[in-house]
Length: 176
Image 1 (cartoon, rainbow, N blue to C red):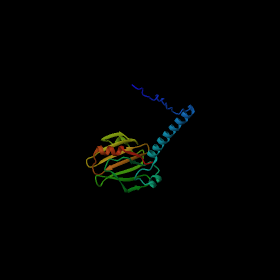
Image 2: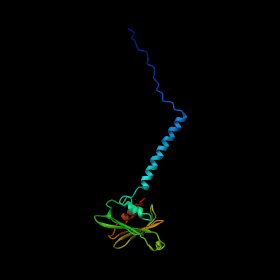
Image 3: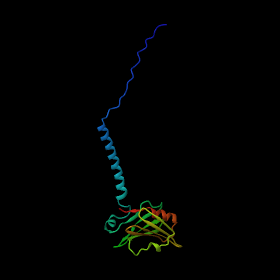
Image 4: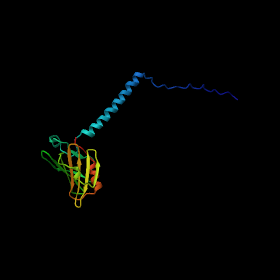
């Protein structure tokens, strides 16, 4: 039997990763941390300090008290852009739901005349902006939110389901 020529085995090629010095690794890690911090800071800024959708910028800038709006209202709710009114101590606007049913909102500076013990709410809970009080009346639904600086009154002349009103009230955030 003739001997076959077999080629010699190929040497294994070992791939080596580039070697980074400790200084290079620290600089790279610091850059990654700074990039993540900048991205998170940008997201925070956009979420906290951008103008509320629908509330006119000039209205926000000329009021001397904080304004609030529902950031994520329930499905089917939309702002009535022609409803904004203001005076020295009150801002009013409206949302519409289920076709053309109004949901009226007024915001005024908090005064000592607002006595929360007299509210007698159907439901009371804490929201992002303050204490909320919901009242289920025979012919309408009403809610109030007491913040540290303002009183937000929400009135549904046409009776609104309390769970939906709760969701609407709980979505209020600062306009700026």
